Each structure stands twice: as structure tokens, then as C-alpha cells.
Length: 260
Image 1 (cartoon, rainbow, N blue to C red):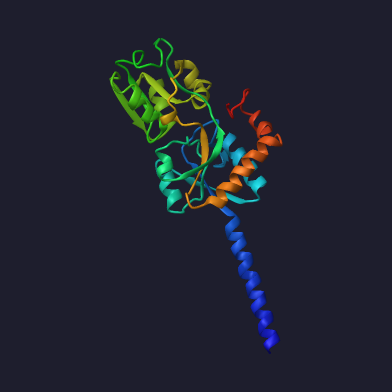
Image 2 (cartoon, rainbow, N blue to C red; image 1 turned 180 degrees about the horizontal axis):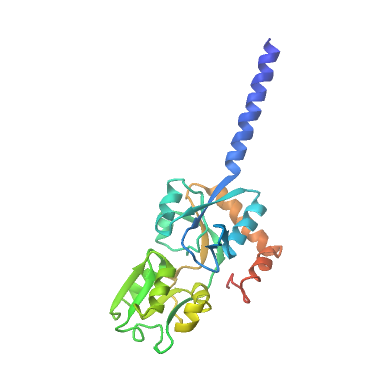
């Protein structure tokens, strides 16, 4: 009888232990529902596609994590992380001092320029002087919104904030704003679209501001999840060293997206 009880207790411990391991390795990856090509967007079947999809797949495989993509709106993604609705943010989120007050980040996984686009017939430079008197569109709650307010707010006619980058781009094409600021690669994707190619062109990179724009894009994690952060950092380093990062990146870019 005693032996049987010990055996049952051991079996229960194994089951519970196995469940704890499975739970620890299951990670909810927060992706934004708004389209942000070439990084993330949804295809006709509702499946997420893009560079960041392949990036997180490579990282999770390397780190031996069971990752599940979990859709979240951009303006609610940090609250979703802190309330444990998701475990990791993979959403082209720049590492900034302001965000580090609330969450933590892995090492950067890419870094690209920030630029401004406008209509082809309108010639200007992405400076306070060049954008004087213009209506500037930007996505809400982004480093670009902060940058535009700081550097162009005093001279711009108006700063219009949008829930999605796509809405800002479409208003530029429709002539409701004069300029749009965003990540240069996201803007490039729009300029290669039918609507973007017809109306607009790239006006140049904005001046550097490390305090606002940060050193690059990282995976967002909760401050207390140090073990998960270490796993993710090790995986990022490994896929860059073994060539996996370069292999899937070449499908999307003809340059080094990681940056310096």
C-alpha cells in the first residue's frame, strides 16, 4: 500500500513537473494587427507574413520556445505585455528610455533610418525649415510621433496622428497631409505600392536623435522576465552567427538591416 502511494505520488509529480516545463516554454508573441510591411501584415487567409514573422520563428526555434503569435493593437501592446496577455513584443518597437521605464528589451535585432515622404510635386527637405507650414502625418504612440512633435512642432501647420501607418500613408496619397514620417523601410514599401508610386517620393532621412529614436528595435519583455530575455538574446546572437538571420533577411532586403 505504501509502495503504491509512493508510486502514485511520483507519477503525479512527473505530470505536474511536465506541465510546469511546458508552461514555462510556451511564449505568447505579441504582433500588431495593423499592417506594417515588409515587417508584418496579414495575407488573404488571415495568416501573419513578413520579415518579423520569420525572425521570431528563427529565434523561437533556436531558443527552443513554443511560441504562439498573439494579435494585439499597437496602442495596447505595452499594456498587453505588462498585464501578461502576451509575453514578448515583436512589433518593430524602438528601444527608448521612455519605454524602458515600463518594460525591458532584448538586444536590438534591426536598426534602419527614419525618413519622410511627400508628394512628388512638393519639393522639401525633412527639416524644421523644410516642413514649415506643412501638415505632417504620423502614427500615434510611436517614436516618430515624439520626434515630429519635438523637431517639427514649432514650424508645422499641424501634426495629425493616426492609429495605423497605412492610414497616414493613404491620407498623404489623398492630399490630406503634406508629409509622413516613419521607418524608412516601411515608407519604402508604400512607395513601391501602386498608390505610393503614383503620388509620392522619399524626401530623405531625418537628423539623428538617439534619445527619441533609440539605438534600434528590440523584443519587448517584462522587467522581471530576465531568464526569458537571456534566452532571446542568446538566440538573436546565434541566428546572426550561424547565417540564419542573413538567409531570411535576403528575401526582403538587399542591404544589412541589422545596421552598425
